[in-house]
Image 1: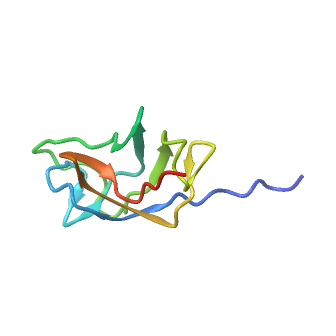
Image 2: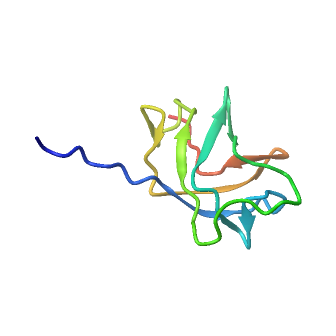
Length: 100
């Protein structure tokens, strides 16, 4: 029986959400984030706190994307090679989001 290929999760190349517990020096250290909340490409994993979250040796990746209308989305999975997270309209969004 042939092995099913494993999808490589897109890396978060930069995060400008400095107030997030997972952000250290513009690098996301959450193992995987979720993007999207109804009609907005918000970083659903954003956590504003004085705590330090994530694993310092980990570079964050996109685990799930709820933005079915994004050109990088297939089956609610992101297929962009990498994404950028930052502030858009005073919320933390996936800046790589591109409507189909």
